Length: 146
Image (cartoon, rainbow, N blue to C red):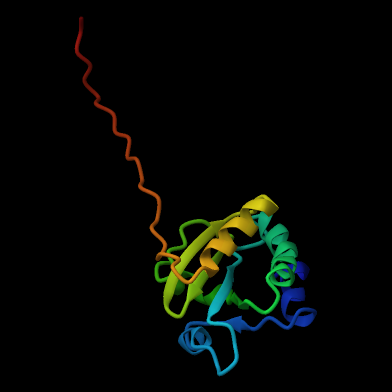
């Protein structure tokens, strides 16, 4: 784990969430915000933008003061929780309301995009996240001669 990711716990007090604590974390206690913001870090040695997202996350929590509960997904739990949270790319931030994924923000983004998308996810009528359609390209080994 990188020092920037470790600081999320030691300096900012964010809990590490694993497969055993995931469901309990998504259920807010009385008076807590219903929205969660989860950080899937990936391996920071292979993904340099993990550190960038780790720096931005506390700033986002400050910008949306008291609107999110946040946590870092344990690296040992990422594989088990990726599909459930609709994560395809690491690192990613995932916004949930209860068990419902509202948005997934892969890699580092522009500050304005973070503000827009997190603000939209906080709306009462925010729809569940729909992953973008994938385009599958295939090739035909046989070409017609003209």
